Amino acid sequence: MRLKRRNVAILAATGTVGQRFVQLLENHPWLEISVLAASERSAGKRYKDACVWRMETDMPREIGEMTVVNTDLKSVKEAGDVDLVFSALPGDIAGPIEESFAVEFPVLSKAAAHRMDEDVPLLIPEVNPEHLELIPIQKRKRGWSGFISTDPNCSTIQMAMTLKPLMKFGLKRVVVTTMQALSGAGYPGVASLDIIDNIIPYIAKEEEKMEIETKKILGTFDGEKVRMADIIISASCNRVNVKDGHLEVIYVDLEDKPSIEEVKEAFRRFTGEPQKLKLPTAPEKPIIVRDEIDRPQPRLDRDAGGGMSVVVGRIRSDPVMTIKYLCLGHNTIRGAAGAGILSAELMIAKGYI
Ligand SMILES: NC(=O)c1ccc[n+]([C@@H]2O[C@H](COP(=O)([O-])OP(=O)(O)OC[C@H]3O[C@@H](n4cnc5c(N)ncnc54)[C@H](OP(=O)(O)O)[C@@H]3O)[C@@H](O)[C@H]2O)c1
Image (cartoon, rainbow, N blue to C red; front, side, top):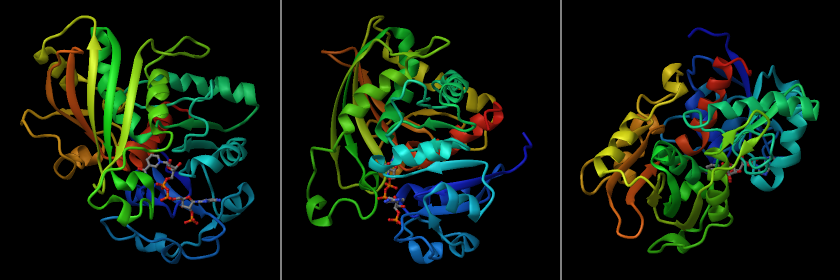
């Protein structure tokens, strides 16, 4: 697909997710970074001086020379042409700032602030692309020429991707325990003295997000709003000493009691609009099934499909629920910046941007 290139502003461009956006957008065929914004601490500095670059590849040279601007509509508009905005703002300040940008621009947010708003999509392009139909409803209701669309929480995205193909078996109950990577806490994140030789069995607001967001993502758009999926989810979230890649142990109760082979086949066959439309960031396989007894593992599997595939393994029967399995996803790619970019590609391909 050949399309006009769109100019992108990144809010919170200096953080963990912002840096991943910068890395993934280098040489993107449809999207070009035109503005980098962050807090007052960074505004006025060159990007290379404002951020502690922690990506595995070098900072793109021309991006390093760009001047970071303050995160307000006027400063961003003065800094360059903008067609869409990626927001990686901290959740506690994102709400009103994103609204001020959405009056004029499409805002694709990684923050939690607007995820559960009734008229805001909580999008996983392979799972619920029809929820994009909330956008015209939102624009009409709020009188904006732009809009807000959100990506789910990083742990939720990878779990919801694996639950979607199981819905046809009558998904009823889900129990999940996460082992979440350090980069999920941003930079500098968790103090080294707290996490070395340790596991922290609490991540603020994470369990609630997994339990409620999943019901919206798997819910049905009825022409006006999303009806929540009728499933019960129980989550326990832990921070572990791994740099990138969240690993989750998932137990599901299914009405139809499929065989393990049928479950594996449902995972393997799972595909969606991004694959059909051949979007630039779409992985060939959204879910990869590993048959080895000791996979998936963060170090070996987080970069599968360029970090955009979710890897499942150890799929087996469960004496309490129906089946159990492990699921791994790259939290700053499929769980954050890659998710935002794939969402933007879908919106461009479908004419929302
Ligand atoms: N890390 C992940 O895996 C992940 C995954 C999914 C979603 N998220 C979400 O993405 C967002 C960013 O997370 P992160 O991990 O990138 O955090 P982070 O590494 O701590 O970065 C925070 C960013 O926010 C900016 N910021 C802080 N206060 C600001 C203010 N008052 N005005 C404007 N910008 C401000 C910082 O700019 P300065 O450098 O100028 O201070 C920095 O760019 C959060 O909402 C988080 O929940 C993170």
